[in-house]
Length: 231
Length: 177
Image (cartoon, rainbow over all chains, first blue to last red; front, side, top):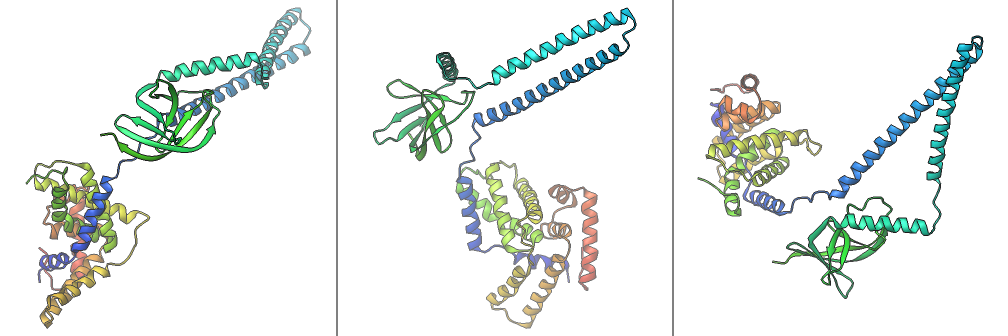
């Protein structure tokens, strides 16, 4: 008996039947017709990078603080050592010099700490603060306006839904809730125009639309209702 | 024959033509019909998404074989591997004979022989099974098998030689050319 012949005959019987073949074909066509997963929006990466940068800055500050502290301890040790051997005038003058320099350094550290404390104190609400916040917000607004995307057009509908025209795509969002966020950067906001020429700052995720109010911290959230092409 | 993958009709042609081969490669490696079906589905999905153009049908076949071997290996090592025996397909052998109405003693003996051959091959370790399939069923050369399995030619030769030794020990009276 020939192994090859028998093996081929046996393997020929192992084949998907018509129903299985059709099922596989349909599954492949169905899966390949699905749109590919949308890339993460830019602000997700921006957030991750700024987080990493903050960590590195913190680590550098900590290292600096440790170096200063160890320097201060070293100077103290030198002071004690010099005080114990206070015999020679030359040595005494050296000690004075060291002591004065060390106290100046200590003062500098203390004053730096004092400044830090002042910064660390919670700010009281006042006109000056309001104006600075407003100035910041206006600046942020300008910054956000630099990211004008002329493709986005928003239409607020009488039923409180919002239609967003994104190039050739038309998306309808329905009101969901209102959120607020506390953040420093406004770079993730993009500006969109309404038919009457007003500029609105938004974040457009795959299924959610955030329409920001003037304070740039609170936003009305809309959920995607339907998506179609304008063509 | 040049297929364009942009139309589903031509994809269907390719799939219908190569599905048995892809399915057998996956079955040989995985040992059960359900996993083989899933792996075959993955292979054709990748093929469809790759949207490659092939100079010849041999190139297309080589691409699909390599893809099937890789997918079957991933399935075998993956968490979803079912680790079931290959009895389901072997049972199909006798069912097929029954369907053809050939119930003579000679047909029964033929079925029995094929079952023995298939059983012996399926008892080999997966790396030997794949080499045996590609060499004896697909009539591929050592270099072609080496390319398809991403192994060296000497590795393929030694696997083939060891697989033959094991089969000879199990199947007496068979010639291996």
